[in-house]
Image 1 (cartoon, rainbow, N blue to C red):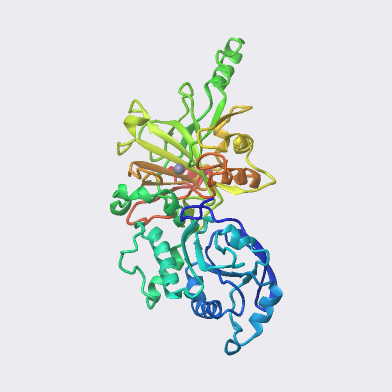
Image 2 (cartoon, rainbow, N blue to C red; image 1 turned 90 degrees about the vertical axis):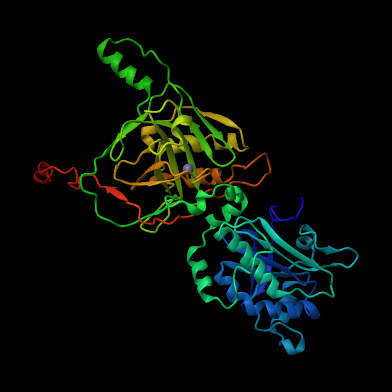
Length: 477
Ligand SMILES: [Zn+2]
């Protein structure tokens, strides 16, 4: 396996010493954080010791950037304990808070391709690993050359800044952050999410979509606490499949068998999500609320690792998107660049192993069969789209954009207030889906970060809130 930037970091783990005790640490402990894995050849070495002491001075700065540091040397954890108890003037690293991992077998060093052949120890070096466990930078030097810690901090900041500002990685950029700019650090701390890093890996090409910078209607957004919007109507979801409609009709009127057999539901891994294309024969549609006309349900896909939208500042564990197009256009293709072309209904997912929604679990049950990009599988029983909607039909409505390329601002968003439940097992299976073939990186997270709301109007429909405008409603309540 190559250890160039862009590749998954080899998994590592073992006993470390810090804070006066032995602790097990491993790569997985740092999921969701940036990580600097810092190799020194051995404890009590001159260069390694001065590096650790320098590194200790920037640990808090890095921590403010959601970046953790783990050191590793071939010495055993017991030697680390002694090393950590000896004062620097006697060659130790007393006062250093960084976990120092033991690697007496040299397995970790070997897996990171840092073993100096015939030397029995590692080179000086470090790897910067992103919150998804992907290597983003590395530095290796031979023993006499110390690691420049200021450069290390600069690299971490550049990497984080790249995704934050959605800029291309370019070492020639002016230093994006100055060490003495506390404002920047605070801002970063407040805005960083694991979703930001998703962009480094997946959407660097969003440079090709200027609207991501110039647009004023980008999605997702946070949906604030607010009161119900007067006169906003409820939505009508007509998601019943035709075979059920016909069955009811014939059974009651003519008592004959249904004309149309239930159509299977096919679940596909498209390399970014799982999707369900709604068969052309299935005229599921949506109208009412803020919508002008009827919108036809076209497909369904999912985001996980978080939800894309947040409600009152809180994210959930995932988000289903029901993509519809306006039936005044002939097809999705025709509708997708029209201002009133698209409506996406969003249903947030919350993990609950006791009462998962049975329809989402039908998808979960076949995810193992679609691990690779391009693979499809059919659910044994067709999906009941209606069953994927929450019982409470309260919703937020606002105008926004697609959250994936091309980010065009043509989407009437409907975000249901009440989430539906999903089992942790199904979410784990989603996170195991691959961006490509077997053994490729898995889609552990596929959400776009929150965008600026600006002066957009957000509407809220609350059932039984008397906002269906009539005085009768008041009397009835
Ligand atoms: Zn989506």
